[in-house]
Length: 566
Image (cartoon, rainbow, N blue to C red; front, side):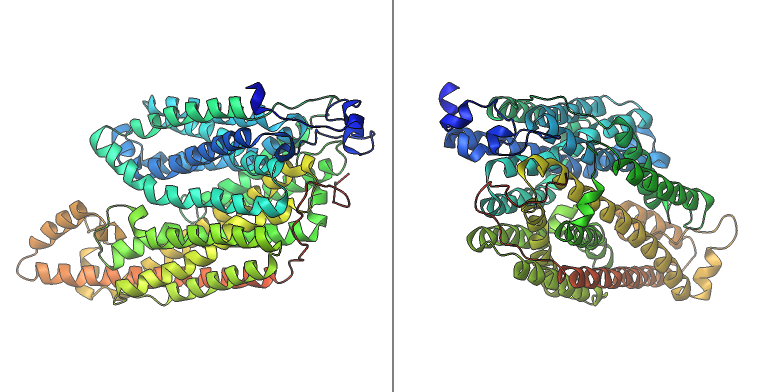
């Protein structure tokens, strides 16, 4: 391993303690973490190992979410946990999003390696425990443990790439890393479906173990250590306040419109409490010696614009990813058995532009025109999706997905590099985690609002479409439950309902055909409204990115003149 480490410091630097401010030409007073431009001190072989460990970590996290999602219906049936179904995803999301800024700050203060490995170990242990779950309560707790580990992996991954490459080169690798998410979205459901049907749902969690163990081994071997020369002040109170402020906000938007009404005391109370705690958190952080999530980040216009645009883009993106399969399978009646196949055109387009945008940024150092073009494609894609109906051809659907994907790929890969370009190396964990945190908030709010719109519009449209005879069948305590679009997705449910209609006599099948047609048109109208909202959200994001200031990406690790937040 000694030959994998190559360091050529100057004579002056050798006389200074490694990682001290004097060794990097910075004042010695105040808080500082070690500045490690790894790309300058590591051999190419060592850098290749670091990149392999980072990619394995991202693949581990991305695959898990898509593989497990496919297995959830079987999990619910086995553990008898339909009433707690939402908490399996919510627990993971809460732990991941709320912990991101904390992990990012810790990695800045004490080094990437230890916390990247800790995050992966938590994730792998959580996976093993999930596979051993014998109740929904256990599964929810262990998924939250997984989420806690995932909260470390994503921002620290981005920071590690920043430690190796200066921003211009960093853009190239950021695009490659983000394409892993698209790859996982395609492959994950296929893998999850195969494992669930042929081995058992518990193995959708166990499959993480070999990948995780390899990823941990790579990280332990490849990632350099971190020299710590001064005692940092850990803002435990700020970390606690961040969790207390973020969790009720995420819970409120996860529950709103499904578990509780938007106007319910639970939702309003959670939102009010969250706002109060955010005020307290900001007050605390403005006075902390080393804040967990520095409010001064918002003073940087590029960080502020990037965070708002990323949050809006995440809302539009997850709306497309979640509800496009429902349209293709429910409205069009396609036979694809998983969302990965349905979304393949969108994800392939996103992978192409994610990598392509990174190459352009690396070559030119310019990003504003690329970002604006990407967001314009998102607007066009969302609008085209909103125009789809029952009679839309598969060719048109694929075209619309490709347009949307081309835009999403640009947005996925650029903002982390743009934001990191504004800060010195010892802030990369904090700013990467901050940006990712706001993306998570945007995705959570977007999914909640879109889900509410879908349910409300479908119910009202179906009610208006049903004939008086069909409405009569739904009345009374023994009436048929005809307000569930699941009848379009499940052969078993459709067969059972058809048999029920057969009992009505000669007109039974005619009524069944009329009902199915009403459900299909109502679902199409609801999804069209949803994508129309996504269009407006995308337009707002498009307007925001015009305010993005362009500062050419640096081609060195030099921190001179950068915003240090100190």
